[in-house]
Image 1 (spheres, rainbow, N blue to C red):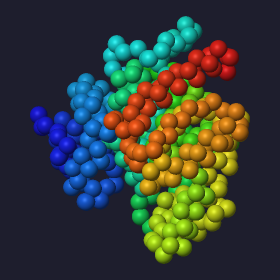
Image 2: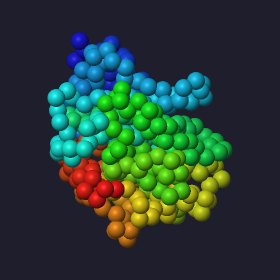
Image 3: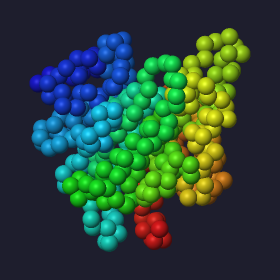
Length: 351
């Protein structure tokens, strides 16, 4: 048994035998410098590495299937996977459900971030899944299509949204096997993964267009909501004679994107009164995704009368994951409580 410490590097961690079944999903498409960094570089305590690895070890020891291909028999889509994380045995969800809900537990589908270039699966996927398991919920972590390298001739979108839809269909088709119900699910995401989760509620690329049920809630960590804000940041950097990295926007809209063409994937332009309830958390000192994205989302939710809860902190930066010991400490539990509240209210209104 290898002891994992804050000084353990990502490369060392992925080489440990007890984690090998899931190690390909800890950090995907990473460069050598990332593999050589210690876990503490990302925040060993903040990101909940110890509790996450303990949960992964327990899941691997069960011997049950954990990795599911989202598409069957399509070699071009072989990398799109779902990691199934069943809840900790004998742990009920944090609130009881109405008596007519007896066909399984509500699940959460989690989309890790990574600027649509990669997935920070450990920090922004498996950790959230482990925490939700501890709260009594089944969790699935989605590894959707990405675009790593230039020239980004064509847009990546809407392929990740198609992957999200296919993943939900897979879960619905095997709901009895997974022990979940098709109603009341939540979609969670972080950064670009939160953008993907937020797309699922939109009128132009959301669940209705795929003929699927909408989620009871979206649980979003530092979501990259507004393409306008990212372009504003890039233009400000150029005015200050600084380098402006727009590779994220090229992945969304292709090499020849314009402000107008990007708005197809700017969430704030495509919300209506049927948008799902939202829990959102972010920090004002985030250097990657401007906190203005979260404020933009909140304003649209207010305008539309959509239920929401927000936990916006002064300090905490980007990629804080579970946020243990930070100003947003406890946000996953708050998000789960919000989700439960939305389930109960929707059950009461018959929606």
